[in-house]
Image (tube, rainbow, N blue to C red; front, side):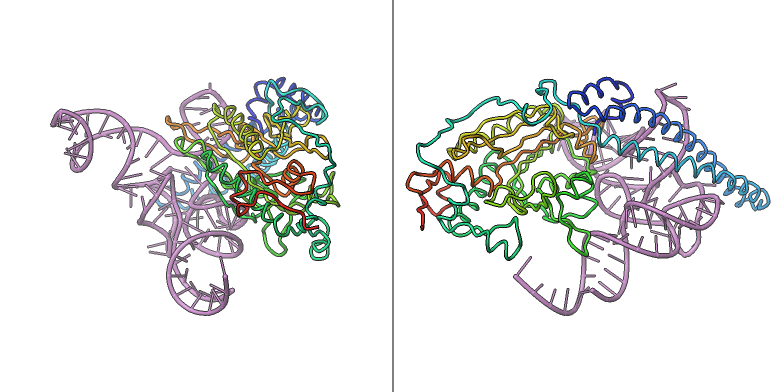
Length: 429
RNA sequence: GGAGAAAUACCCAAGUCUGGUUGAAGGGAUCGGUCUUGAAAACCGAGAGGUCGGCGACGGCGCGGGGGUUCGAAUCCCUCUUUCUCCGCCA
């Protein structure tokens, strides 16, 4: 959500930004908001003046009553009562306009960074840098669920009987590897100075509505029957809602957190659930990083954060690349964003494992997350988030890149302590 | 789940029975000063309080959230949420 002052003062900039994002159908919104804002302020001024008059007369009534002049008081009472209709209609108009403006403002995208590549969709995202050699072995890499199956590590049939499509049982060493990756990622971020946090996995509708659009909500969120509670789709939901309407002390910034949670997603819409394997499922686990900082620091944090992802994957011997999101592929709240993609030797291409974003003040403005400066002024913070690691999807990269010709899988050194010292997983069949 | 009590500004807290000179007493903290080698303590003083509109003067709204009664609500009514105490149940 952008500052409405931008629309009052620089509509061209806002429109230009919309064009850059290939959302021309949203262009009329800018003038609509501009005009509604003028009407809103006019209605508010009128209503406020009438209310001021009413308050003044009410005080008079109080004074007269105290003096015992009931007749005069009654007369004024009638006058005030006559004002009620006009005040009501103006107040209603003011509220309706305010609500309508807010709805439109929610849809107007955040101003994007100057250096975001311009492009209509994800095919125009730009590879910026590679880290590690994307190795193509001279033997065939099986599909990840087949690799898991060789260790008796995955049972989707049972999951389908028990929970339906889109669920899995992870078993034995594969399950342990899953936990090891999460524990490693947690400790990696703690070592970077982030604070570990376990948030609520269910949040009430007021919190849900605060952190996502209606469309997202209906496509993603599972609702608990008979309760005002939803299962979170990512810990970012509870982590950001934590700060809604809060004023943070300047010396508490930056707030750097790494949160863990299971994530529950209906995955209604474009993609659907993948039949084979664990790439897209209804339930997964994720370690996330979330940063709230002063506006002047957010760009530096953005660079630090995506670099953490690269570093983490490199310690796991997984080649990655940084893919910069182009204007059309940027979600509306984002100022800039990049994906860290891991190398898949089986598919011989990179696939997304982390998504790092700087939302500047767009999210903070929407949720009223501010900080108080030394001089007492309040300003919106900047918010950023990035995936640390999201197994089981991440296991795909891990298994494929460490798969040996004989069907075994090497365990990267950094994970071995979390695997009871095991250096290699040997197939059971 | 049952019974009771409570929610006031950064913090503590008065006011709520008896609606109107309380848009919020009084503290603490904050800031300035006196004193002191410096600090603390003590004393003196000050402004401010959240939010929206307005260039401003100023005005609207704000006493947990939402609604209602009234000319007028922190104060009365309804509702939701949260906290505390006791009982019950339970990882």
